[in-house]
Image 1 (cartoon, rainbow, N blue to C red):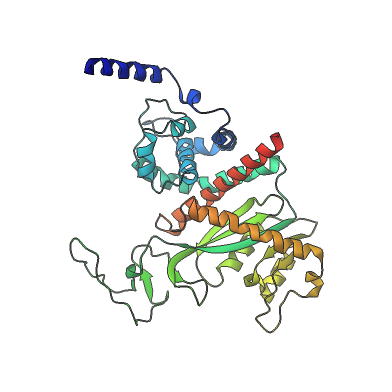
Image 2: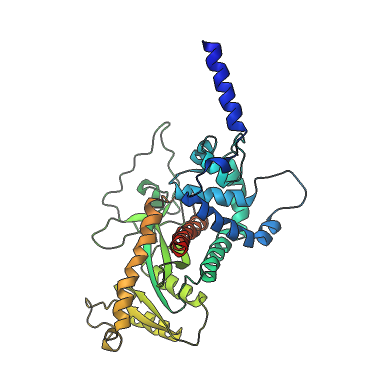
Length: 366
């Protein structure tokens, strides 16, 4: 009986090995449309990939494969590279997406670590995001006149215990456990203290009612036609980070003869920033901040219907923030340092755009 069962299993395995992952993925699966967009984007980056690797030497995992793996991690809420490589051994959809054979072994998780610095030096995340935006513009999904800007806090991979006084020798924790630190009643600020885990993280809170956390500030610039992201940035958290990042992203849009609009919440209703946006050729459609003596956004702007439309559409910028924090796992960042976390944030924003483009393509095909 056991011999018969063993023979049956071997026949099933032989039959499975004669198939390819292409035969096992349904023709109407949404991942097929996503892969088509990803392949088109990666095709635009062949020049950057060729410049990253020498023509001779030991074979390595292609950067296209690593980028595709990053996309799958965001789509399927996989927290770490090690967990992804473990799942790659048995998930046929993942192997199909990465162009691997059914019996191909997963690459080691350290491949991400060894190649990450190379991807950072060539700014591949920014190139990938720009290529995704170019695909959206090619399909005419992107507005060139109306935009929204907003920011959020992303918790760093560092605890309050790591936030210790600067220029002070670090105490050695007991073996087998975390160090006990009593910081209650101690005045701590970014000027006097610094995280020993992530020195670039800053202690900040969104409002007086929210707790202070070690975090970074993420910023998005969204167009209004289909709520696609056209620019993205990650900076240190501070009271000026949102307006400083918005100024940089608006400047990267470039000049245009026709005047454009930029929407935002009350945090952007600052006289100096409103004047700067006007100089850049944008009409500020910010929410009036009436808690102060007088709002900079007066009736000359609010009386127009366009201001009301901008205020209604700008709320959609919370959708990519919510997706990136929940599905993509960005509520607590997984890397150390602004550069690595920024690359993750930019890539995740690109994945969100790919999902939106795939959905719009599906609507256009019906």
